[in-house]
Length: 77
Image (tube, rainbow, N blue to C red):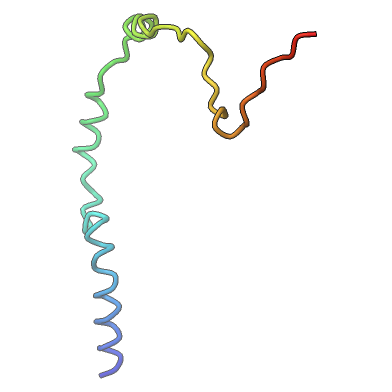
């Protein structure tokens, strides 16, 4: 009786993980192959045109500006 109870408890613990992983429907390769064939082609010209439309920043960005203390003004001699 204890072995059956332990087996049922192990199954109950593993059941949510099986539900998250698809529940044994791993062998549906036909759907996956057709979706790989229908991937859109990358348009290099459109990609480069989009990069050119990004404006250049007026001042350089410093990601560490909050971690460093501000630099004092240079003293005149």
